[in-house]
Image (cartoon, rainbow over all chains, first blue to last red; front, top):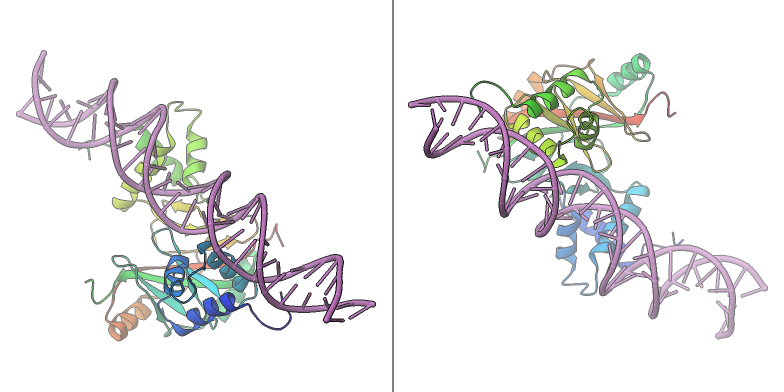
Length: 127
Length: 127
DNA sequence: ACTAAAAGGAGTAATAATTATTGGTTTACC
DNA sequence: GGTAAACCAATAATTATTACTCCTTTTAGT
């Protein structure tokens, strides 16, 4: 990584992710940034998403229709996925599972880093 | 669907899923059944998994390394996924979220059918 | 500033999981 | 027995994602 900053495009990808709550796919990001960065390539979006993921400033929160969906909100929260339209929404009301993690760790002897809780259904528009 | 029963191969796929707790992928199922059904085709496995999923006797519980993993255990439970070796294990100790579902339904107006809770980490062998 | 090394990127080719198609076989049911 | 639907193998097609090649930009050390 460069010491100073992210590159222009990497920064743009990150900021787009920060600015939206739609939990976009790589393709969505590509199409959104293409007008402003006409020489952007889809491979660059994928590569930078991976870099941002390694840097722990972005994570994949769900796979909807075979397609990874990303989020720059790193605090623990859950998601709702509409099975019909594929929309992904944040769910903040959620119990703290710290105790549960501890219990599972002790009983299973696995080291658990994090968890992912996804609710599936039909959103208000689709039902 | 035929009125009597599942076809031989569909039944074999379903029974294999019932008999294991490894949460296999389509490919794993294919390779496991191939010796006994030499003319089995991978497409048949995919197609039947989809049929079984529609019939609600099987469900996809996780995507590990870009690969769907299936489970015939339909009662609500959670899973542990090892980030290193990709193993998927059942986690039964888990709070009942019925109340939570109700709260989310009321506050978000989405109709929630089910949820999926996955824990990620390194299994005892890998850590 | 100068330069070698590393990072970043576009464009394209390659992978890999999954799905669709086609054409033939088996089964159910009358 | 005949017909329509279910089933299936084989293959082709699709689609998301990754790897590769070659070029440009940036960085760090002198």
